[in-house]
Image (cartoon, rainbow, N blue to C red):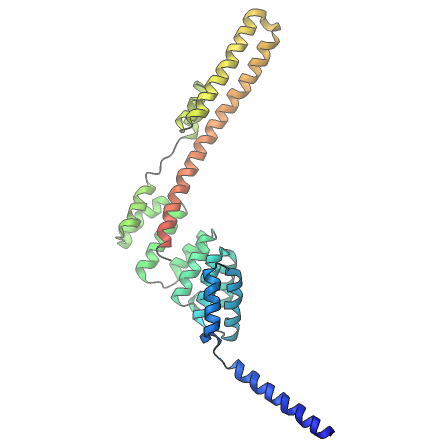
Length: 276
């Protein structure tokens, strides 16, 4: 009796081992159920769960470049750019090992993570198709605000992409306001610096507020001389606001310039997304 139980036990163990071996040899990536599930996750924008599925499949099929690309693209869709960068570096410890589609995904992850210097180095070092690499380098120079260098590049590399050349031309004409001039104008006429930067309402309010306090100080000192509390209060408030308005006008010009540059960089980024 004991011998029969041992035989059954070992038979069951051998059967399970055989099943496990057969299961391990299956090509899980070709499983229609798995494909449907991951497709559902991607369509549902459940990228974190989809990543777990891609990683599980990649674990079963190590060195599958197609799965590696899916993983990198899903990190990009999930907005987890820093994690995507780190994953690429584990997948391909040496950049030269990566196929072109994966290297392009890596370049996009670096750029969207704000690692522009690293992205530029990848664009220069990796053997992308010549035109693709040149367009990436030029666009990254624009994103890094290296406008003069970017303006000299198309002639040297014979880039003829109209959309990209238009962006290069625009880099020399991004609207800007002088912070010094803005502060000076508000020093001469309260609020005028704000008007210069396009902030008409703030400029008008500054003019009226400083003017009202100046008038209040004038009335107070005219009636009661240096003993006028109203005169001193109005003068103090007016002077503080006058000085603050000069500082605010300088900041307004800087903010104006930042907004213009950010809008320009969004256009460059939109162009780069057509290359991704």
